[in-house]
Length: 357
Image 1: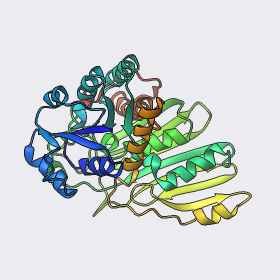
Image 2: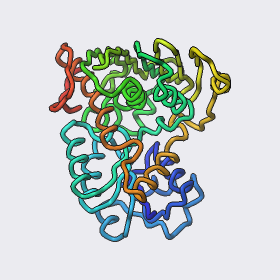
Image 3: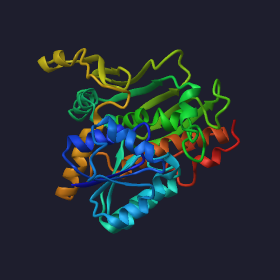
Image 4: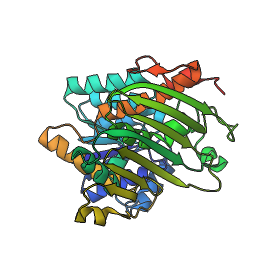
C-alpha cells in the first residue's frame, strides 16, 4: 500500500504510527512548513529516510508519485478541497475529523468518491477502542433491550498556548469550537450507538473563557432520535486545570454501560441482566493510551487497507463522517436561530456562525 500524508500538525504522529504499524510503503509527506515534516518523521525514526519524498505542495506530490492512499491531517477548513482533489485523481483518502466544514462539501466528497470508485474513511478512530467495541457488541446482541437514553460528556482543557501554536484553531472558517474540534468523536459514538436516525436537535453554545477565539468553548444539546430514544451532549474546553474525562453513557431496559477515561477508553460501569463470565471480564476494563487520540488510528488504517483490497466500505466511511458533522452543524444552527433544528440538515456551514460571539 503506497501511502502519503498531507499535514504534519499535532495529530499527524498518529497517522505516521498507523502507517508504519501496518507496513505501508511511505512514499511522501507534505506540509507548508518543512520543519513540521521533519519533526513528525523524527518522532518515528524516519528523519533520515530519503525514500520518503518531502513536498510543500500536495498537488505536486500527487503529480510526481504513484500513491494508493493519502491521509489528510491539515487544518479542518482545508480537508474538503484536498480530499476532492485526491479523489478526482483516483486516490483513496482517510480524512481527519471533521471531514468538511459544511454539509455541501461532505456530500460532494461522498458523491465524487462513488463516481470515481474511491474509498473514503473518516478518522473517527474511537470506534475501534476496545471499550467502545464491547459496548457495540452488546448493543448489536440486543442486550440493552429497548434503549431509553444516552449521553456524551467531553470535559477537557485547552489553554491559550494551544491556540497560539496554531492560530487557525477556534476560527469558524478553519476549525469551529469545542464541539467541532474536541467533542465530535464523542458525538459520532453517541449517534452511532443510538441508531443514527435523528429527528431533531436543540443546542446552546457559549464562549465563556476564550474571548480571543471566534468559536464556542462550551456547548450543550438535546437530541431526539426517530426510534424514540433521547440523548444529551456536553462538550467543553473550560475544565480546570487539565483534561478530566470523555464519558459515554447508554441506558436500556436491560442494561447500563458507562465508558470513561480520557477518551472513552475504559469501562467504568457494565451492568446487564443475565450476567455472563464475559461481563465480569469487562467490568473495570482499561485500555492504555499514550494521548487523548487513543490507539484507534492503527486499526482504522488497517481496516481501510482491507476495504481497498476487498472492495468494501470502510468501517468508518464517509457517510459516518457526514453524520457526525451534521450533528455539530445542527447544534450550531440551533444556537444561531434559537430554534429546534430538524434533520436532515442540508444548508449550513461553520462560517454561518461568524459574528455569533
